[in-house]
Length: 182
Ligand SMILES: CC(C)(COP(=O)(O)OP(=O)(O)OC[C@H]1O[C@@H](n2cnc3c(N)ncnc32)[C@H](O)[C@@H]1OP(=O)(O)O)[C@@H](O)C(=O)NCCC(=O)NCCS
Image: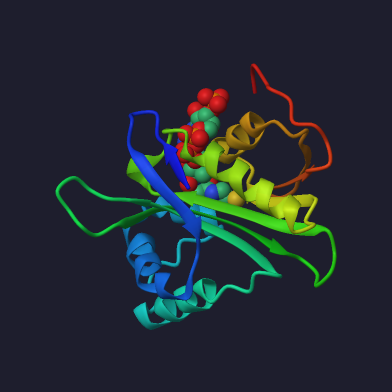
């Protein structure tokens, strides 16, 4: 499927497949310190390239019953090869339970272009089809970007704040509503 960014770029969005591991590695290396910190709750400073490649292969080897994962791909002008510009996933927290952990990351140069909201909606729709109805997301308490993204998607948010971390829960069984302010 395709989505359009606010500045008119068309991105291809599709399920992750095992051959995406190299794309993921390049994507990870291109993320800023701040974006890594926000996505992974750590920066992976000094982590070995071998570990990164292994981790990418693990994530790309998706188990559809357990994990819903999409990537967004962009083809730069006059180039043939696509580059990964965002990824989203919902992973079941227990084998047959209704809860899934949500995570998303958009490449720095593509943030604030409406990708986060569109990918989140796609992931939630698929999650619901797979029987995942309760979503949990872990974030730094000062991560305004993800908070506003989830607000914009519209499901009522239930929030716990701990030591610098915020845990957000939402139910896909509730009706999404449009928020005019956050
Ligand atoms: C959070 C993130 C996924 C949002 O994706 P995005 O494509 O930039 O978001 P969108 O363009 O769809 O914007 C959605 C809303 O968030 C707001 N927003 C996005 N980034 C923001 C930022 N850094 N600061 C404040 N607001 C921000 C947008 O203004 C928009 O708000 P609005 O609907 O009230 O106008 C992206 O910024 C990102 O990858 N961040 C780092 C990783 C991360 O934090 N992951 C979440 C961990 S679960």
